[in-house]
Image 1 (tube, rainbow, N blue to C red):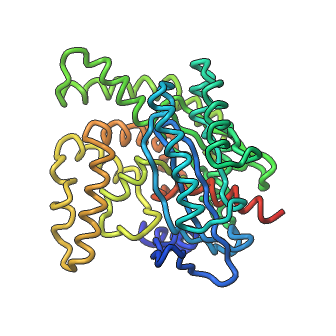
Image 2: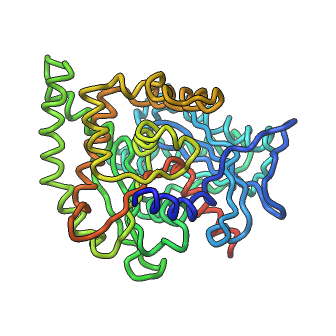
Length: 381
């Protein structure tokens, strides 16, 4: 039954997340006729991300969207030090010039934003002047004094992600949330239109859960002790925050589909179903994620590249799986996988019921969602 839903859901989603295309002689190899190339560059908490996408007008309806390039530079801007500021400015400027010169994307088709995570941390630390300084310095570097660099709030970012990730045919039956490093945000459209967006927000993410657990471990950072305190941290988060926020969102009775984006969603999708390495969306059950979390703690070797590609005979596919799984392990170590999977399970648990059928989907390429929505809204005007 799960495969049936998987095929159905991917039929809609695969149009939004096509495989990477090749680049020849500094010219983008396009996939569609009468399409345009757009770039989104976002300064986030960890660094600067760039996504280059090919789109046709009204891509959310036609599904004519192709990911050409997706890359990032790790700079840790929210440390708000001179070193991280310089690294962020260099990355921001460098990616803009790369899109402009190497990929030949016109300046008016490059969108630049500061993420809600940066906005929130800057306000918390009273460092908003650093954000404005970054914007002003970036404008000088690229010689565009009038360049729009929007500092988006959490609601707009969550709404853009929903509009960009969830196809129009599933828009009003899908609850989407993104698990980041420091927080989780998402929501849904409760009234059958896009005028009202119901925000879902948690001050828990993969990294914040892991950090809270490590603090409790004190002098004993063994895996056994970490797992014991992870259970306690997640239990507290569930009772104090998660149950309340899910109930307050009103998503349960209105959402048949629960979609999850963010790094941990990509990681779990890749490690749970390596045979679906090319699929942009992976359907999972609560029990599958639970077994994954148990494996991450009890049998970590079973998540290694060599083990996960054991039963693959074709060399090209085996190499692709090895590469992707290796990348996952570079981004998430064992403890981070345990923290992220545990947090995901606590949220999924609020939708798991013997009396209502909910379908869970892990979105691998969710980081480009806001770009497509931002562009689509602009070119549709």
